[in-house]
Structures are given as structure tokens and as C-alpha cells.
Length: 264
Image (cartoon, rainbow, N blue to C red):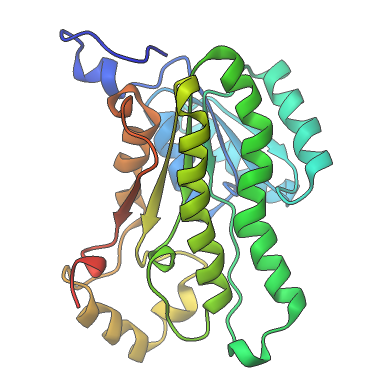
């Protein structure tokens, strides 16, 4: 992966991911699977991750049926021992990890004054600490090779809050600053660390909101584009951040939100 492309590079040279290995955490379904499919379509070998082995292998099979080079490795992103051992296996069996997408995340809703410590710890562990743990292991190889791309999945709640999800907001706000810290520490190694901040997309996680007529009306009225996002609309941003097209971009969060943050 060259740090700077020549002036005669083609668009394909800039955005193509052939020969790259991309690990996407939490990718057996939802946004993670969509992102993995997109990176695979751009030429990368994609490594899917999840905790449910059956769901994971079903996702891998679907991508293979679509003609993509996909592998699956089950491990818990909150467990250092599992992370360290499995990343080692991936590097030996698939190849060096060129692209890491930290996508795994959970949501728990409830009044903050009644929120349990257990749920708080689960959210912080999965949404924030796991980004540190997985990145810390993967980046060692990137540093040794002098190149790498890390994409952290943020949220509108990295910037703004909404009732009943304060712990989620805290976790995603932490990911924003961790992204900037990673970019600061690892930029000298030609490693670009950026983030994608999705707005409201129709996924399994947001299904309760999408099926709530009152929330659906509120969201459409609050969003300049007046609709929910389609997960496929995140793929272009992911390919850009994973490719040589973003070779001098680091520490940034790209919000794909239909304009929500642009307006009051």
C-alpha cells in the first residue's frame, strides 16, 4: 500500500482494494455485514467476526456465493486473550491485516437514573474498550509494515444525545476521541485512523425505533433528507477510508446522516 500515489494513478488505483485483507468486527449481520460485502466488492479479502458461530458461517457462505473472498473467525472483541490468539491465526492463515473496521457494538436503552451498572459496563466494554483492544493487537503488524487503515464506527451520538441512551452516547463520544488519539500516535507509521458516524439507518438494532410511528415521524421531520438511511449508503465512505484515496486523511469522522448534524 503506497503512501502517496503518482499523479497518473487511475480511479481504480485509488479506490481498489485488491490484495488487501480487511477484518470487520461484528460483521455476521447488520451494518458490519454490509460493510464487509462492500470492501469485498472492492477487491479485499474480508474476514468476518462474530460471537455466534452459526450466524457467522452463514454470513461467510452468503458472501462466498456472491463471489467474494470471505473468511470467518469467531471471537469476543471484549476478551484480550481471544483477540490476541485469533488475530495471530488470521495473520498466519489469511495474511497481514491491512484494514481494520471496528464495527461491533450494542445498545441498551433506559432511564439513566435507573440504569444498571452491569448494562453500563457491557456498553462501555463492547462499544469503546473493544476498539482499543482489537486495534492494539492489529496495529502491531501495521506498524511493522509501515502502513495500515483503521476505521472506527461512530454514531450521531458521538456528538449529540437523546433521552434513554446516555451510556451509548458516552461510549460513542469516547470512540471519537480514541480515534483522534490513535491517529495522533500512529500517524508517523503511515497508519490512517478515521471514523464513520452513521445517522439513523434501518437495521436490526434500530427496528424498535423504525416501527414506532411517533419516532419515525419525528426522525423524518428532523432529517433534512426526510428519510432513514439505507445501510448500502455507508459503503462508499468505507471504501474511501480503506483505500489509497484517503492516504493523507487521519483523525477525521465522516458523518453519513442525511444532514441531521447540519441543522437545528
